[in-house]
Length: 235
Image (cartoon, rainbow, N blue to C red; front, side, top):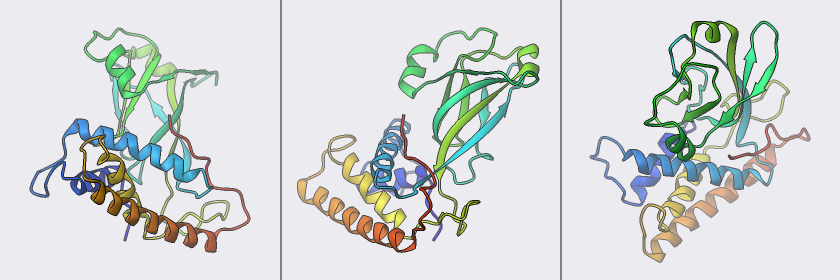
């Protein structure tokens, strides 16, 4: 079974807690965003023991005159992106300047609903929902688009190939999906989205713990002596 994307995990977890039924076309946008944020926290915590859940990658985004939204769907093959840092790169001089990578809350407060002005990007936001889109807080002029590009350092799920370029283990065992769904559901059902009875939450936590032990044991059996593929991080 292929690894689930963050959206699939979030949707299944929301269904587990009864936030929406299988007959609904999709989850509510605000609940999906909350679920994705909590998934990031869970991955960060799990990665603290050294399991290579995430892989670090760098994306170069060519700016387009007048364009403030850029799809990352092609770049993030696994369907998930957790951004870490962002820079504005001068394409001819090679100079690099760090720019602000905002959370959704900061983006909504500082940018959304306000008239954008022309200029070099200073604030960006990566929306993980749907097509995963990069939003820029200023409108690139022709000169800016020809002079600069945006570089993003991010972590994504491990690819499903057997090994990475350096030979380290990349594949995640099949119990990954079930662990992630139940782990996330136990947090979302603890008052984050809904307040479920303690016995239901206990079942979710029990399933997550069992799958995590299986996952950890499988990764330990196959782990090489090389360093982890990526260090865990969440904004």
